Amino acid sequence: MTTITRLIPLALLGACLQGCIHTTPEWDKQFGSATRNNLAAQVIDPAAPANTHPATGIDGRAAKGAYDRYQRSYEHREPQAPTLIINAGGAR
Image 1: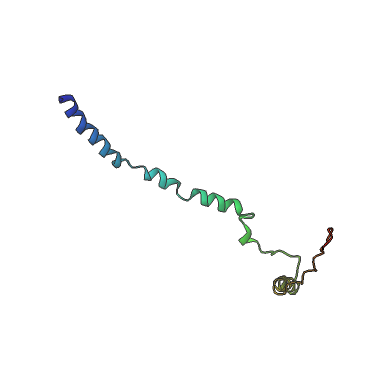
Image 2: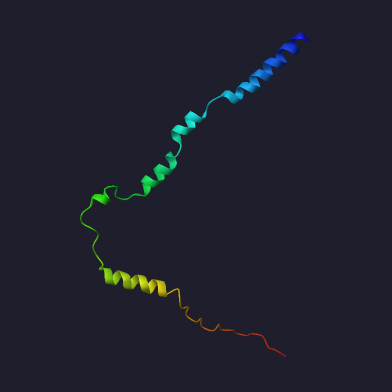
């Protein structure tokens, strides 16, 4: 009985000390690295803010017209064509 009596407090002490392990500093070093890596992967040109020559190819009026037509395309739905029903069987 004396061996069991000595082992029980030792086991309880070992179980209680498990809560004293500090793993968060290891986790905190990596916190947010996946988000930063994903954000960096989405950037095509990191030096874009320093570019003094903006993209060319479409003027402002044409771009606004295209955008307005796109927005209006969702306002008015085109009527659907009537469905074609073919009755192959005879009705009585």
